[in-house]
Structures are given as structure tokens and as C-alpha cells.
Image 1: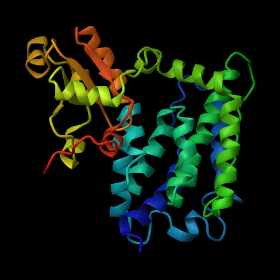
Image 2 (image 1 turned 90 degrees about the vertical axis):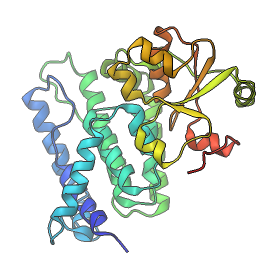
Image 3 (image 1 turned 180 degrees about the horizontal axis):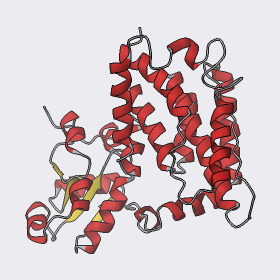
Length: 316
């Protein structure tokens, strides 16, 4: 049975589809009108909010006494917009549909071209999550076209939409995912260019994951030649963490930890194997700690993956 918050979330998605406040610095009025038309079409025939079985029909729109729940979803999504790319990618892997939903919406609002991650949501077991992923992919296609037409005076950006429509069956979900994947492959170079425009100093483009095998990581930790660093946030750590891991959240490192205080937390005479939830945040951590003089090796495997291959979870 749907919870009140989840029912409200379905309605909030309908509301979010109509949001025009996406990351579109320097957009011309014509572009904004096109964006508004794009959202209105999505809300029209065959779109998210109208028609029998659609988002409005199955959930209602922020009504029916669900305001409190809608506020909860709205606040969660707004908080997600403050998170960085790595944190949002971790949330997309959450077993909580509400978190996947909010992260997917936030990715679109921030204009992040995370096509691979979003395409993975198009076959999600939750229809609202699928629609949130679809919405952000449509926005990505709009931003991509806007980039391509940036120097063409009077030309209005357009978008593509390969679905899936609300409540589509699994076969159509897969068909939509394939269509989006083909589109992403065709536009791979331009999507990378768009990502660089949005994040010109992205650590992902500068630092790679360690080439050390996980067996070597285990051996180095066992022989005390290395330490294991968890760069997730405190709440994630509290939900579960690896035995003998040390917690230093990325957010704290970005705020700036004095060198003397950092030295008390991390030894410079040992290799530091860092992990997060999906292997993204560690790349930014690697850049920060490398500049501070540490031997840092970011792991591609996230927390859940490390447990699956035999890393011991700490007892609560």
C-alpha cells in the first residue's frame, strides 16, 4: 500500500515537471518559452499529468489533504539540489524509492548530464522514479541542444523524449531505455563537452581510480601498510560502515581542515584507500588529499560492493 508521503511524491512529480527553474545560465527569452512549451507538452496528451492512468489520475496533485507529505518531498528534493554529483549518484542506488526519486529530480534541476545513471532508472520498479529519470533526461537533451545552438542567433533549442510514458509495461520501459542509450551514444562527445562546461574543474576528468586489486587492498590493510578511508557523510556512516574504516566526509574536506588537524586523522606514511558509495566522491577526495601531500588511492568499488567481495562490516 502506498504511504501518504509516497502518494504526495507522485503528485509532486507532476508539479516538478512544470518547473522551469533549471540550470540554464544566460538563457534567452525565446529559450525559456521553448522550455515552457516542452513542459506543457509533457503535461498534455501522452504526457505525465493527464490521461487515464497518468500521474494526475493515479495520485492527484498536491491535494487531498496530502500537503504535509508534499512538503516533505519538496524539502527532500531541494536538499538534494545542494548535494554534489557523487552524492546524488549514491542516492540513485538507494533502496528507498523516495531518495532515488528526489536525486533524479535534483540531477535535472542542476543540469548534470548523467545520462548513464538516469537511463538506468527508466526500468526502475517505481513509476514515479522512472518519470523523474525521464524528466531529467529530457532536460539534458534540451541543454545539449542549447549548447550546440549557442552561437546561432534566433535559433531556439529543442529536446527529445523517448519515454517511457507513465505506467508503461516492462517491454516498453526497455524500449525507451534503449532509445535513450542510442541517443547518448550518438551524442557522447557533445555530452562530455557539456559536462566539462558545467564542471570545468571536475576531479573525475583529472584523477582516475586506483589500479590496485581489491586483494592487494585487503593485504595492505591487514599488514598495516594502508588505512581505509570512508568519505561518505555521517548519516551514511551511521547506517553502516566497514570495520576499521576511518570517517572523513568529503563535505568536511571541501570546507577545509587545517593541516595539523588533518595529520591527526590521516597518516602520511601509509597508503590511503578511500571509498564512498559509488566510486565518484572519492575522485574529488583524491585531488584534495593529493594536493595536501597524501598517497591516496581512490577505490572504484562503493560501500555495498566492498561488502559483497568480503570486506567486513562493522558491528553496530
